[in-house]
Image 1 (spheres, one colour):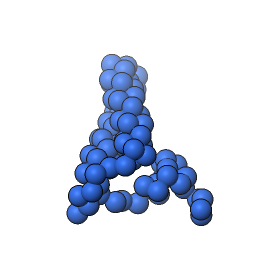
Image 2 (cartoon, one colour):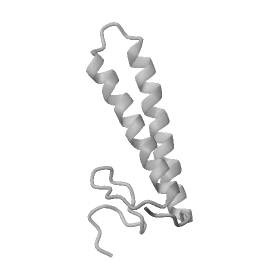
Image 3 (cartoon, helix red, strand yellow):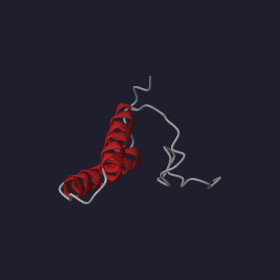
Amino acid sequence: MGGSSPSPEQIEVAELLMRRAESDVRACRRLAGDPEMDDDVVGFHAQQAVEKAVKVALILRGVDFPDSRSGLPDRAGRRRGQLS
């Protein structure tokens, strides 16, 4: 398992992910209070918040993992799909 300290870039990505996770939690809470909202929509935002929070923990622990869907910079600071 990783073990190296996160770089400033990794900390920046972790902070961005945490803000997005917090946004998903807010959405989840608001949607949960709407009697017309289906549970699967609320559950989706809850799952997204947890997934992002887990990624934050992994980044801060120095654990490498593929980031294939988010469009966030990878651990080297490149955007998905860039070769340089």
